[in-house]
Amino acid sequence: AETVSSLLGDRELIVASNRQPYSHERENGEISVSRPAGGLTSALDPVMQSAGGTWVAWGSGDADFDVADEDGRVGVPPESPAYDIRRVELTDEQVEGYYYGYSNQVLWPICHIDPAKMNADTAFWEHYQRANRAFADAIADETTEESVVWFQDYHLGLAPRMVREERPDAFCMQFWHITWPSWDAFQACPHYEQLLDGLLANDLVGFHTERYCQNFLDCAAMLSGTRVDRATRSVVYEGGRTFVRPFPLGIDADNRQELADSTETTAFWESFRREHDLGETVAVGVERLDYTKGIPERLTALERFWERHPEWRGEFTYVQKASESRSQIDAYGELQAEVESEIERINDRFGTDDWVPVVYLNEHLPKEGLAALYREADLGIVSPRRDGMNLVAKEFVASQVDEPGVLLLSELTGANEELGDEAVTVHPHHTNEFVEAIERALSLPKSERKRRMHDLRKQVHSNDVYAWMNAQFRTIEAIRRGREVAAKS
Ligand code: G6P
Image 1 (cartoon, helix red, strand yellow):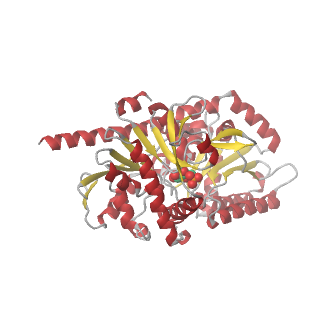
Image 2 (image 1 turned 135 degrees about the vertical axis):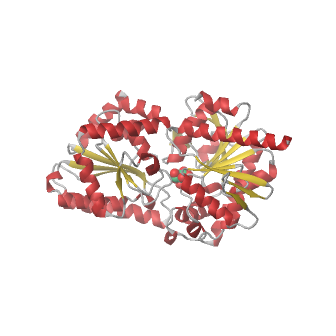
Image 3 (image 1 turned 120 degrees about the horizontal axis):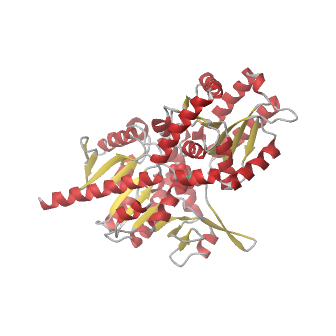
């Protein structure tokens, strides 16, 4: 953790993302704080706690602004503030168009290569531009030429160009947390030119995998006025150069391990187990209710598994932890309804008086609760249709401090590049193979599970979120040094 600050030196770090890591809510006059579900904020919060600085994000409710100063600033975490959030206020209409609209009905389906889910309403684009402007204004206000501005994800595709115009000397970089698709897929985006122009205002753009970098370079090559330099993996454009590099995101593995080891976690599990009449063997899935996560496909495989294996009925329970997500969007509302009715149907079909095949948890779970599920599960099933990285796979691994379980991992995830060798691979659309993977995972001898989990844990601990952060800051240093040398000669 110390290296993060030492790499930063005197420079102030400004992170910008749509989602904030803490939100304030008012209930019966009392203010409470919650942490949203999703990989991005949970991964970056520990990094910011150790590096300090300012995190610019969308403030989503009145209470968010009641507790903040007039610039929307508030120190977090609330127990012992280590950095500031600066909240950007957006109108309901802007949120509708920019967040529910352009970000999640255009960019999200395109990047996850599911263009049939796209809804390219023209008003969405207007709002996306305006919201990016609102972010850029707040960011520019925080930024000096010594700052490092670190944009996160697909909500802020235009803001880098806008900040660059105001603060030409700041170092701008962006990490894109979702897949970057091939040109053939990205071309479906009606505003690919503007988005590429926005992103190429950064000095550095990072993705989870080398393939996403190559895809991005291919797309950049299609924008007029660019020169793509494959040897240095960079793009020359508008008088600047953007380096493109892979930085696979990790988690705060030590912290997850500690949590999994805690007495609170053990206590949670004991009461959970009693309450739910679980079978001897437990599998777990944890996700936002998002169509990219492949939950219905997984339920189909599980149903076929119980169909083929009556001997496992009563013995094998699947626990689905689900968080409601983006539910105003039709595709999400429909997905949630589908998941819930499928679970009901499967439970009606196979359930008995003292066994429920699928335990569905959609209420809030304390962090010990999640840790307990991860730690006690014999199988962790991560089977997205498409996922840029997937941190649930890593959280499961880091929490496996006891009896070693098995990770089932979809080959359509970024995480598969790092964890695929020691996980049991699944394909969300290949039901028979999926069922065989469950069978294989259940029959792995303990020594084999131990060996695999050991290697996975090593991987997740050594490539943790701090390593991810440090790699980016070392790259910044290298870019700066390179520029100094070039300036002198
Ligand atoms: C993904 C995205 C994040 C996002 C998270 C949760 O991980 O890459 O940017 O924050 O999903 O989604 P939400 O729409 O609730 O922020």
